[in-house]
Image 1 (spheres, rainbow, N blue to C red):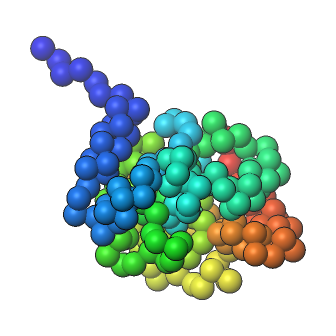
Image 2 (image 1 turned 90 degrees about the horizontal axis):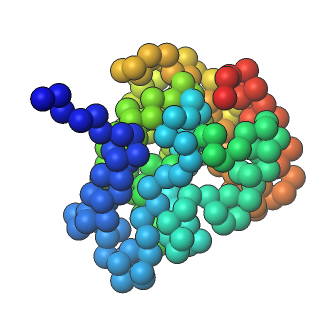
Image 3 (image 1 turned 30 degrees about the horizontal axis):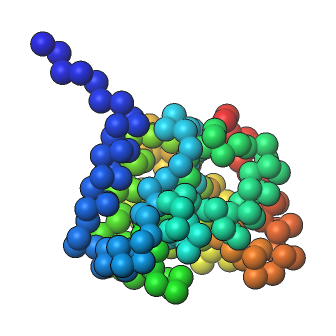
Length: 203
Ligand code: URA
């Protein structure tokens, strides 16, 4: 008898179940004692464009939804600028649980959660991965053999790097993290200019 095909949604659900029970994570206790949720990802599992941020903040950990706080409002403005709806893309983070006080993720946290992001990429098989900020940029560019082309985000922002994934062609698009426009609204114009590079891809 042929084995039944497991759907993409089921495969993502399995990731969620594993992360919920991930006691070896350095962020597990912080999540459970605060009643927070892990933030797995949201959007279309058939998306051609996938966005990867850093880690959930407080609002995200309270709701389990990525980019639903102040940085998310900026992201929504950027998506609207290039006519992308949240339901046509997939949004996730490298680290799936909130680091305390929104500090930067540690190398250990990236090591623990990175393999879950790797699995999400294999499931969704995006044509484009948009990395938001230097942590996502570093992780994804190293993973896809672009380490030698790594530059500071001040140089890399707004660029697309062509590479290959296991399933075919993949472009990595680098953007500043949207939080830069939370701290300084004048940065929104530059973010908008950078995201216009997505217009050349099919949705
Ligand atoms: N910042 C991120 O990197 N990810 C979120 O989900 C929210 C804020």
